[in-house]
Length: 213
Image: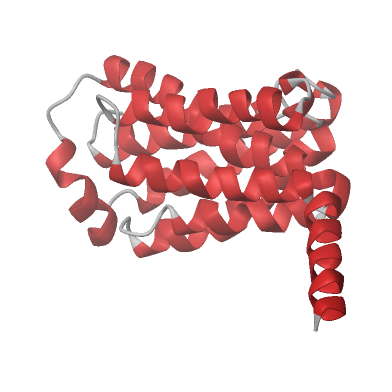
């Protein structure tokens, strides 16, 4: 019995040591999403910036003892990711315009009519810094050493789940965008392309749905 217990302790210890970085990244990313849902700070954009941006960076420094810049914060290989961004937006923006009259989309955004677009864009700029860093920075680059390209798939899952409650077509589309943006960031070695694409998509969609453009 004692030998079995000792063996299991040894196996558990080996597992924790061998998968330490991945356990830290996935566990803390999950924790931050839970905290953001149950304990929002001030408002949605500050809360996202703190829980999805500031706290992951502190986790990288304190628990992983690595340089946060290595988690996609650098510009990266812009010669790779800029063409992807331009092509994606050239396709996505017209699609958003054409789908803006769908009843499910209009129904979700109907209560958001009285607001200033510039103020909204600035708030979303802060919001997306945290949001995109959590998925295409902290998770993508925090898991790539062990999972390689598999980290693209892993970060897509919570990204999609956090869209539950939004229009069905938008939630389904995040499966595609989650993988595509993850791939672009992985190849481009930066989270910034996803930040740019998500910002343009979000603000453009809001403007189209509310008839501001």
